[in-house]
Length: 297
Image (cartoon, rainbow, N blue to C red; front, side):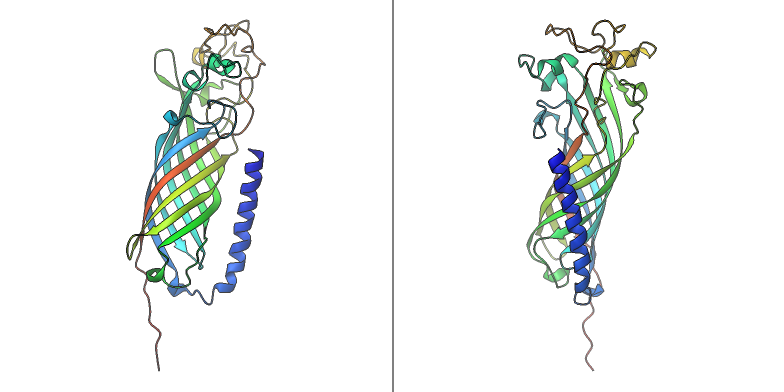
């Protein structure tokens, strides 16, 4: 993840440099050639964190994929550069019970941990979109097929929930299952790539793959160590795997015979920040700008 974070930082720096160099095109690409589009998107959401099948970044469970929907407005400033603001809602989810292999010695601990979660994410993002094929003309003469890159910043609200022994979902953040009072409001770095296709005069379709580098390890409510929950509520003790601090309890699955490693102070998660991805299609409608013909005297 560290390498990917470095790449995303370099990408954002490159976008900033490219945006500054585009200032030289401002006179050639005048305001009469700029245009704005509005769009809707239907996407698939996935998560990368402590409850994945494997501990590496590329591991995910297709069965955990959930829908994401969004609205966006995009303004083209320069031949290659646009700015986009978007609002989106989606869900991420995962379960140790289905993702971890109880017969794998490297995954048995996570199977025994037996954590589960779902998390609804409301996101607002602002990104710079850089086309790999430029358009120095107005929207009527835009290319039919354009690959692009994007990067920027986002803020989001999240609230992980876990399913208890009765099958009911419980808000996890107030329980402080690891003794940590993390915030439901977080920031992320969105970046990725896509392709855009011209359907007709005003309509474009796009396919996009986007990553979200977050700065929290608690999208799944699992990050650090097991806490001493002796004075906590029953739900907190259940999801925190607490049993008087002497043996595994609560949500912990002891059917594998793994008895140790679930006591206060023991490692519960990897201590790394979580990620989520947004992959899908969008339709974007170009609002008719006023195209003025040059006057001849």
